[in-house]
Amino acid sequence: MCIKYQIFKSIPKNEEITVGIVELHKNIFSTSENLINKISSKEKLIVIIALDGKKVIGYKIGYELDNNKFYSWLGGVETNYRKNGIATELMKKQHKFLKESGYSVVQTKTMNKWRGMLVLNIKCGFDIMDTYIDEKGFHKIILEKNLIN
Image (tube, rainbow, N blue to C red; front, top):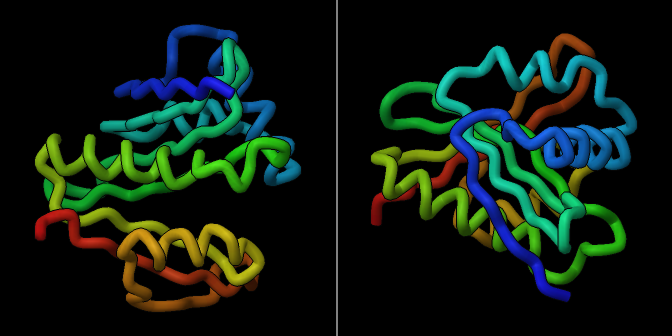
């Protein structure tokens, strides 16, 4: 398995990659409704993908909250590729890029049902900052990581 990673500062122009992200998102989260429109509405977007050949097998998407804080918003890895360190590598690449771009904090949110992501975030240095119930009644966990040592 030869996984390659690419970083984009906007929605990828390559339609094959964009379709791959949407399809993977739909497979993981059971919906892709308006995903491209939601992504397009974000300023200072960063998209990082993992490819096996031309196939998108993982992605991490986020955007700037302010000059110092970046929000790591959406991400996932195709089921058949999990447990190979791909999510960890996507996160490492994201954090390196963010640090080099001048951000000092990265924030994310997750839920208990995404335990693998919660554990990965904690293993990678995130701290739980708060929890809340969203407008749909879901319990959300807010995590942050200081990128400056």
